[in-house]
Structure formats: C-alpha cells, structure tokens
Image: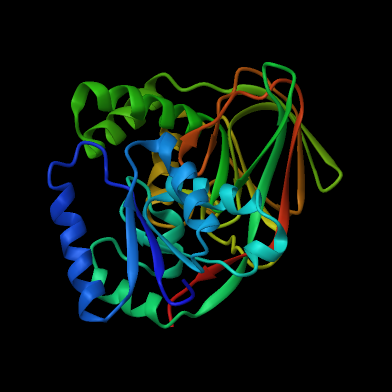
Length: 308
C-alpha cells in the first residue's frame, strides 16, 4: 500500500453531475499513472468511518476530495490514532466542497485538477499545526475536536446555521450564502462574552470571535498553520454602516483594518462565558458547549501534502 493512494470522494450536496466531477479527476490521475483506490462517502456521517478504514488498511497517502468539513473529519480520525501511525500517513486535498479555505491557503484551486494532481504526485509534505477545542457537552462529558482552519463563535456561526436553513429553501449554495448574510445584517446579534487571552480578560458584548489556525475565511488573514500560534479576531458590535464597510474589508482582505476588529496572537484562549453564542468549526456547526471551554494549538502533528 506504500505507493497506492487511498482517495475519499465527497460529492457536493445538490450537484447533479457528481459522476462527471469524479471522471474529470480520474482522467488526470490515470494520465499521471497514479495508483489509487477510491471510496465515496454517502453523507457527512460516513466520512470518519471511511477515513478510519483507509488508515487501518495501511494507505500512506490519503487524499480527501472535498472541503473544509471533510478535512476536519479526516484530521480528527488521524488524531485518534497512535502517533507512530499518524507519522506514516500524509493527508492531501483536492478542493471540492462548499468551503475550501484551507486548500486555498496553500494555493490549491477548485477545478484546476491538473495542477492539483501534479502537486500531490510530488509528495512534498509539511507538518502542520492543529487547533483543538476542549469543552463539556450537554451530557456532561468532556469532549475535544481538532481543526485545521478556524473556530467561530457568535455571528459567523449564526451565518453557517442560517446558510444551512436557507439552502433547504433556495437549493443554491451561492444564493443561500448571500441570503444568510443579509438576514444576519438586519437581525444581527451581540453576545455577552468573557474571554481570557494572553492574561487579558475581555468582558463585554461581542459580535463574533474567530480563532484561526489558518486564514479563517478572511477573518484571521495573518494566521499560518506552522508557527505554533493561533490568531484570534474579536469583533465588537459595529454600527450598521460600519458593518457594511467591514464586509467590504473582509472581501478585500483588509479585515484587520476595521475599527471594531481587535486581533490577538496566542497559543491558549479560554472562553469563560459566551451566552447563547453558536460555535462553528471548519465551516460546520458543532455541539453547543456547556460552561467554559478552551482553545489551544498542537504544533506539527499532521503530515500534509503541499504544492511544490
């Protein structure tokens, strides 16, 4: 199995030409003489089961054809394995999800399969950091979840939730995304939070917090997943016109210039209070924490296939 790739294909929801997408990628793989075995996920719940199967069957290169959420499932599977097992596995990505922020961080482009496969076949790996959120669930059990890209607390997690709901009605990823942003603008919330970062306590009403191991969908643009640190962006509640200017700065990559945005860099964040604030991790809502929770970073724990 040393030279065979284990490929997990995660089709996009609602896309009719799922088979054609795989056939385009398959042609690139075959033209470059890549030896591989492919399995396809039936739904989001099957991703972790299939990744675990690939690991246990001895594949040393595991390629996720999917987005940030599928990558999140994959790294959490790897982190449940012994270190000696993780050290032998390299994780790669072909961007194919609704959100591909971590792939874009490295320069992988959606749809450019030829370039992506060329880079993956070079087998250039880099050890990357993972963020980790540790919390108590509603059953009183201690839980932890790793992330490659970011954790969002508050309004951005609300957008994720609204996007899921509006997508059921609109049947379009793009329309549901913009509809959720518009709904958030006119029904925006702030949350009473108490955060501890770098021995500083922040206690006030906050709109959203992004904890980024990478770019965090533009909210932590200076974060990199290989310096042993997390970037934290805290956004106080802006006025309506400031909110519009903040969206423009986010789109143009200058989010940290907004007057309501307060950036930090740390290896440990404690959330002592965040009343009713939803939490999203790598583009997906997670189980609501009960009580305080912490977000930390673990340095150089995953082998990731990167461009030449």
